[in-house]
Image (cartoon, rainbow, N blue to C red; front, side):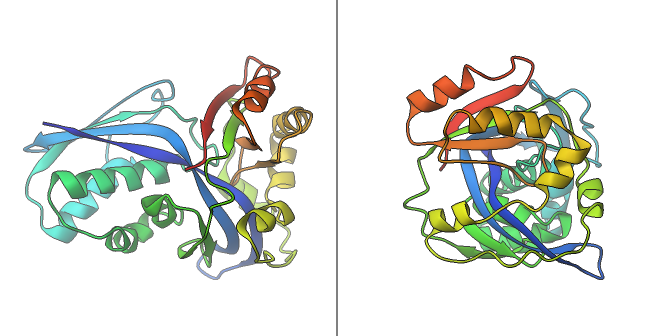
Length: 275
């Protein structure tokens, strides 16, 4: 019998880029938070590994070893000496290359799922350590808990999110992908300063996303979305990650619904809540 797991959408409540690293990555400081919804993965026992992809954004994704889901499964097989396989199904509900976790969240979700299916008995920290080589966002997505990320984003400190969790979350994407490499490559190297740490909500409000103006220059629709969201008087509206998805947080479902009704119908949007 198979099992399922949600790949919770990730948002960056704040993202400060501090410096370029010799290894090609950037040192960042970020506040991770996670939605209650996202892509959905299903797996069941099989002799070999296989991946099927469908869903609203499944078209265009490869189902071979270039996919992070299969890379994760193969890495877990190798690390734990697993000889059996799994039939994996990815229901791709989130836009691709959109700044809300995407492949990283899918990789984290299949790791949690296969950990149960194969009876690996690994702790979440074990999975995070093993998978960090596949992507800087994957460790945070393994936990899918509010956290402060530093270094490449893999150094995590879990936060008291009692005044952040359960807020109503609206995600909006113009159905355009932006290249993370291109966005970071456009950063001019100026360090705008560290995230000022205090209460998590106050920290988020006082923060910024250093990649937002860079992504907006490449994809002007981001600015259009942020202007539209700001007109709905959210508690916070900002771009997530390297874009192009933006988010807005509201205190109640009615305010979110009213905001969602004003969006361009050509944009993708999802109403959910923070975990």
